[in-house]
Image (cartoon, rainbow, N blue to C red):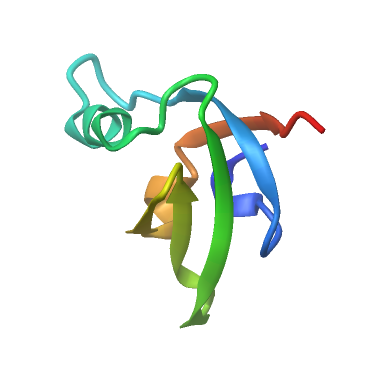
Length: 80
């Protein structure tokens, strides 16, 4: 599952961030923000027009991501 497909209010664990190229700056920035394997993320809100952008929480920090950016983050179901 991709982060862009996560249900509102749901949590999951980051598996990996997809690199579009060998030195992909967007993938690197996502990892720098904390989207790394094993981190739990939660979808807090979706934008009013087409669900873009997404408000995502990683740890105690919230980030607004475009759907295209969120689609690059692959998730596993959160541990219960």
